[in-house]
Length: 132
Image 1 (tube, rainbow, N blue to C red):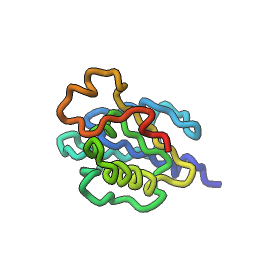
Image 2 (tube, one colour):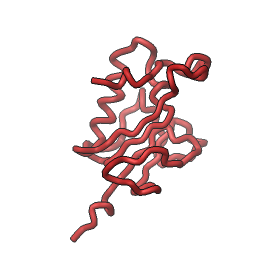
Image 3 (spheres, rainbow, N blue to C red):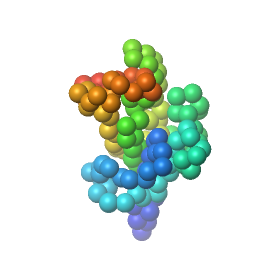
């Protein structure tokens, strides 16, 4: 019998130099990563895959990952009011997630001064923005 966790894969988008797992998903409460693939647009961060998720084609096939993690990343994608960009990013995430997979993401609080004061933040994200 094949252990289902032996084929478990997780994608960490916008990893930067950190590899911390901040959120646990119900189907995998392991404290560490299982089958981790890291992705960042900055090659200096030494990710497994160098990729600008907004402008480049994602190299993964449909249903590749059990979990996609994005910590303090989504608010940097797109521009405020750019609906197409927002939905394209989520469509790419949906595409690479296996059926029943999870997106585990964090964004700054809408009350955070960092959200409004950093020039690199293109689209402000808050919980109400992720309800469909």
